[in-house]
Image (cartoon, rainbow, N blue to C red):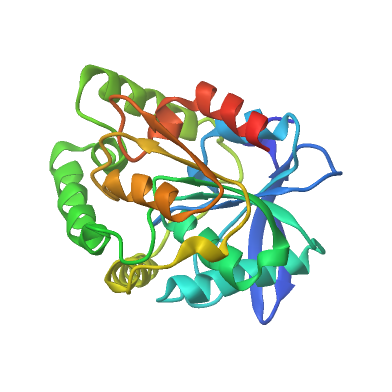
Length: 274
């Protein structure tokens, strides 16, 4: 089975119906993907899901109130982390690996701090620690580039995730084409209300007191493009510095979506790390 054919499942827990998809083997420690701002199930790069699912069970899900999941969208990263733990435990897992991209990387950090026994390893991409420099400006950047995309009839991710160099433009076009491979059983887009709730959560994360991440002993792979405009790349370097057991990768001529631009290299590194 390929990612575009993976069926959508639901599980009811705590009054919320979570929508999720999975791919890969049915044994071993699963890799739970934690998604970015405004994303639904269809926003995961098929090449990354399929690449990691070649050796590990991959599970992706819609956050509460997003896409096909019911309920109201939380306005804090901490609440989103609690929901993720609820979802993971409802599936019967006592230990998982986490791949958190952007907002998902913030959620992953909280899970590792609040539920350390649940997490074996983490991959954090395009993200930063609480109180990270410039994270509180994500709202303004998101609105500006969304408006820019509307005026030019483009997808906002072209501006938010990729550089405007020839390499970045080409990678953006290829990434967006991959996201359209699935034609049946596509997810619902995020609502405006849920989008604003997530922006509020990220803004609050950026305004928090800088986090002490020394309490996270798990191995962590920290990754980004070297020119991230959404979560400035210096936050990725800072995250690596704060984590006691991490390794850092910065992709050249790449932005927030560096792991999508360099998806082949990312999958190779992720499999070696996991």
